[in-house]
Length: 354
Ligand SMILES: [Zn+2]
Ligand SMILES: [Zn+2]
Image (cartoon, rainbow, N blue to C red; front, side, top):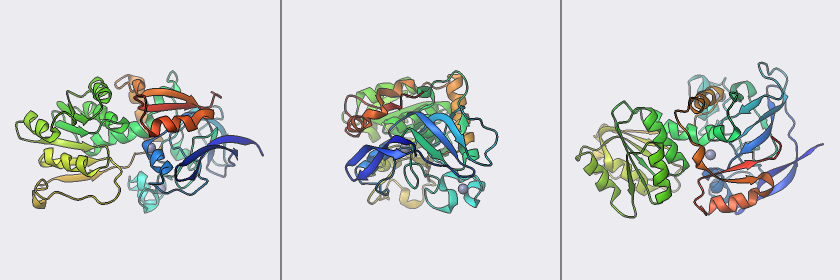
């Protein structure tokens, strides 16, 4: 049995590079040789034991690679083809998928999130892709691995914050937190036609990048009261859409406090513990507010659309890759990323077998 290197969740606090058998595939599945992948904030939650996965699970859910093998019944693809696979791998056939709720595949919460969660993930030399025909998305010629590396998760998730918020041309939008997902939400808000975008973070470098991606007003919450500043900006009217991109009580609450009556709070964050609604800001439940949540949209059509945005040059996220590591040094990459050292936004992990 041939072996490969893979980043494995050993126990809370420990993700280690181990040797594992190359996965075997069944009917309808594909084996992808991973050429580039990355680490997500969710992987850090797994590392810290804040999101439970089985011990021994190979982590990672953002693969770019090359088809190495196709299972029985998989048609329309060729071995050697470059592909991206979304972080969410829907079956494409169940009731939830056919209702358009691909991320909730099987009708279970987060059911579509399999990689590095319910099955082995892609921080490895090879990954088994379930439901290959719903999930393998060919990479357009001329796009590099790094150019499409944000498509599986960050770009899909961030953009979905703007889409689920139903941003209309001319809207005023606030985005709370400008980590990788918040930055993509900002870029998404511009794509959707927002007239003004105000973003909030505490790290000047991130605010500068937000500006480059479409923010009009950047607010450092360490220096000023973000809610007050945004309300002033809209002459007290409040924003049409507020996007939450962190998953904390203060950011969620601030979104509600800057939202106009009838506005949309579009939430992307992953919350833990308890979330409470401040009833004054919620207009006692009578403000016609809409609260929407979105889990990273996946599937091959979503990936095709995102890659077409990259190919068109409408959005350039390449500056988000701030650090590069070979898979051999992924433990160091985790150390850097988990501790947010050296201005890291996203790391590119290469297997050295492109
Ligand atoms: Zn992720
Ligand atoms: Zn499904």
